[in-house]
Length: 262
Ligand SMILES: NC(=O)c1ccc[n+]([C@@H]2O[C@H](COP(=O)([O-])OP(=O)(O)OC[C@H]3O[C@@H](n4cnc5c(N)ncnc54)[C@H](O)[C@@H]3O)[C@@H](O)[C@H]2O)c1
Image (tube, rainbow, N blue to C red):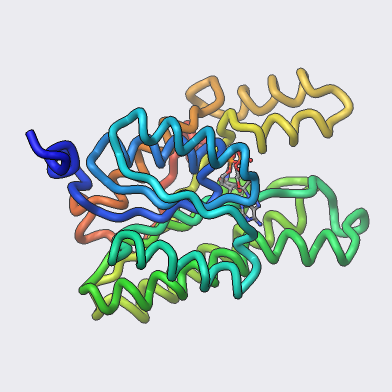
């Protein structure tokens, strides 16, 4: 067996996947799922410790990994990171833009600094990384871009005005890019998770007066009667990343335990 044999199998054979927010939660679980399907992984996150731990897990899954620490909302950083990814792997086939965070505040409780910071990561970071990979994908003949929305941007949610504004805009950005780049064989889709048990959600529960009651209310809101796992979102990401979804673009894939059906 030569060193590449492990990479030539699976649903993402030899693909190069950039995953922002790859240090934690949905991004980390997706990196592992992509690696197990034969992809080579570029992990981007502002948390260097989380990056290093996620990279160890990707290597243990048998894949090559490049880690890039920095802010997805900074244009010069994203340009430098995209160049580093291309220098290492020569191409980018998949982007999962999962970096995101929230303040858990209504408009009246949101400062301009908080508003700008949430938009900078969730929306500008998604724009900057999308732009960087679109250029590379167009040159190499196509690719799959996966953005991450939220069930709350469709169903509504309280005390999360900046976050939900960005998640609503993600759907429009995805459809816009899907139309602009269909002729380049670049597909763009949105994952729409329900409440997924990650550090981001755990932080959101801790902000409430009664975190246990907040968790119980969230569980009850899902017809499947539980929170989702990051690994369950990762499986949907594998589908959107792979050629199995070759006729799917400009669409939203709900991974929400039935939240939006109720
Ligand atoms: N967990 C949920 O219930 C849920 C529901 C709907 C949507 N989402 C979305 O899924 C995505 C992933 O969320 P998660 O729950 O896995 O969160 P998480 O907190 O576990 O992981 C997010 C990662 O993004 C990184 N990050 C944040 N800002 C960054 C920046 N400016 N530059 C680089 N890295 C940055 C963090 O360091 C962290 O490692 C987010 O876009 C989130 O909005 C999550």
